[in-house]
Image (cartoon, rainbow, N blue to C red; front, side):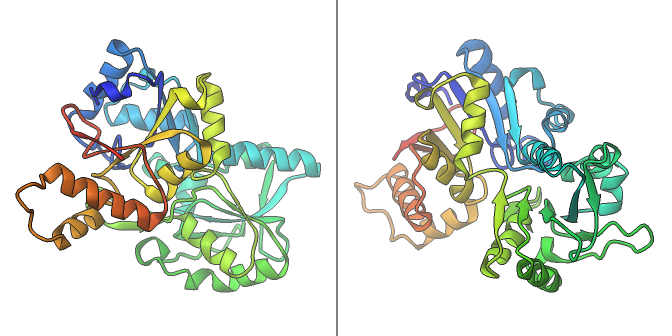
Length: 333
């Protein structure tokens, strides 16, 4: 991250998972020093742009718990924050609480605001319920479905436990099929509070996210309203908070589907971090390449594999780098 290629940018828009941390700890020992260098030596503005279902204040708290200095970040835009604001706006427009079916994680702990499951909303609905903004209900009464997780279905019954699903670990949406079919028949919108299809756990396991359910709902001809990357509006919100133009910002992310496609749509240059969600796929591509001819160095082989990977996802970063760390060779694409 000390390349002069980045001198033209006055602000960096940073993804979290796969760039800064893995959900439990920094991605590498260089991440935090790099952030300090960017702010204190290079005078860059930093913002977090994340599909996390956390609200912005909880995001800063979680970063601090992992050893990051939250004061380094100028601003933060998360899917959770935008979801919260949107639901409040819908209630004002209706003149009553929004009636929702909630697809989430660890439902009981979320409603109690249990810090052990803070990643999935830190009591996301608690304040909304207290302020009479939402009422959780069954699909036949609902105005919409709200999805920010993939292990529980909450309909607001005070006695019945929330049905649990295995979608997070298997990617199967079978447990949601009846609900989604009935919702589509009623033309209910699905509000997707985390557009990611999957994320990587600290041990490298694929954990399927709410975007997986939203994708299935679209296959059933249901309408989905997404809050997060790759949708341009969320990049625009971040640029506005930073007070910079598109040309002055560089987005750093590890997902071609969400980070890089989103940056392409927003007209923002981007840096793909190769050690994140596509690491195994890229390694497979490199392994399938023929042995190096003498004139082809490792850097060239990696660049060729990265270009192949980008073409597969029709997402095109400006640069790529092995990890968000010092001393990394930057591939210009």
